[in-house]
Amino acid sequence: MVIGERSVAARCGRLCIDLHVPISGDRSREQGGQAEARDQARSELGLEHEGRGQPSGPRKRGPAVSRARPDNGGKVLLNVEDVSLAFGGVKALQQVSFDVYEHEIRAIIGPNGAGKSSMLNVINGVYTPQHGRITYRGKVRANMDTHEAAAAGISRTFQSLALFKGMSVLDNIMTGRNLRMKTGVLLQALHLGPGRREELRHREFVEHIIDFLEIQAYRKTAVGRLPYGLQKRVDLGRALAMEPQLLLLDEPMAGMNLEEKEDMCRFVLDVNEEFGTTIVLIEHDMGVVMDISDRVVVLDYGKKIGDGMPDEVRNSQNVIDAYLGVVH
Image (cartoon, rainbow, N blue to C red; front, side, top):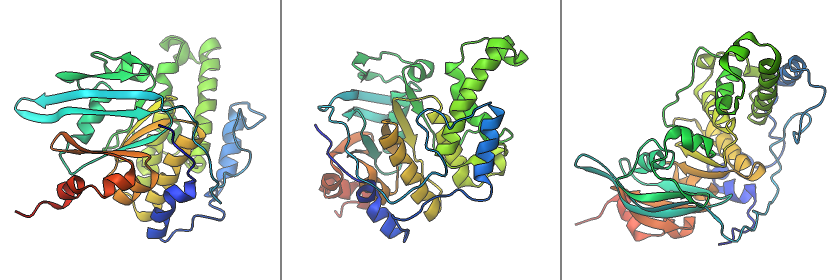
């Protein structure tokens, strides 16, 4: 399967129209000293330049330009085969199969209780299925736990925020670098020699993520003091700090207002397009799903009832019945 050209405007256009938000023009959010905050951060790190591959100056969010997804010949990054999961007599997943191509955005949708979050929990090792298998990057991952999943390049956000509310934005995102730490706890605590040099390298990486997510002005602010939409950005930033090849997003736009949702939509697209990160997301907002997803799989009562391109899924009678019910 070859995923062809689609512009950010085309993929986000209907959503932006629904929200009455322009999709062209200067979308810079750099206000109120954000540039100064970024310069201060880089000065603390001893950086004279912006860093590898980072945009200089304020980051613009428009006008949108077309981009071509890499022609990978339909290379499969993740393959879910005949997966079943039960909790006692409750069947959360029943023989579910689907695949995810490299560099695509793959959505999992379905009514409440359909098994969507359980599916993500199987993929990143929270749950071990009773039947079926997960193949990731060409290798069968049998009984993979969460630590092994993270080490393999799978990162995850959850429905409920699990941030450290008393810690700063910077420190919260830094926790995502834990697996990349090579020096021991003692050297890190003493902040000397190799420990200090390693921390500075990781902080430089995190500063780029903060810049990317346009939260420079809040880098030293305790997360608990931020609005919900900004906390969701921090949660995304922590997941990105792990440098994932596969990013699992569990309802990344839940609870957001219209402007926050439109911004998060653009960040998800940018992560996919600029970083080349493969994304599997759960989202209840069908406008978002249909606009930004390359393919959609639909679950209902733990069973797969639909799989295909957004328009195919949108017009599927099985999907319509699952969401609206069937008249008997």
